[in-house]
Image (cartoon, rainbow, N blue to C red):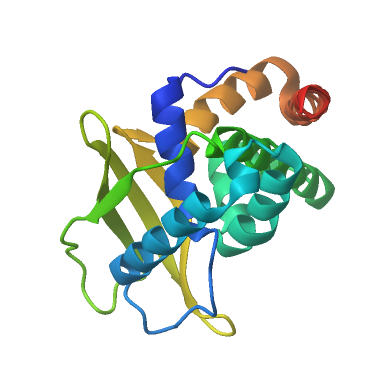
Length: 212
């Protein structure tokens, strides 16, 4: 299963996800676009100041992404959306296995591209949303060398303890991340079933671990 992203697009995708790298206590009343703007500034400063990331220390980058990014994403929803209708047919054990392996895949993917992020800046576009909306899209542009890159976030408002906005999908140059994986996963499930998808993800992660 190969991702049909170019190297440049891949780096932009990582930059978008990595805006969550330095997340202080999330304010429940902070607007989604304000959150993205604040985090974008913080993470760009953090990347530029982190010599280990700049030198390509993959283990450090993986630990950073795993510890800082993933806790601030609705990862269960992302996995369910990527797997599609088959998710509801999977047993709780299969769902957990899928989520675990998908998380490893994304963590290493993001970590592997993180060192490509250097001198970019992010411009937040005006957001149209009502105060009562529970899901919004924050549209941004990544500006650096060359043309500006479209980078959009789909966020949901989470209630209760830890209330605030969480990302559950991203759009890079018109391509939504979850839909990209869904197409790949659907082919795998059609050919090998849900256990086949789990096996493929597990084997791919093992291969990636050996490379890193």
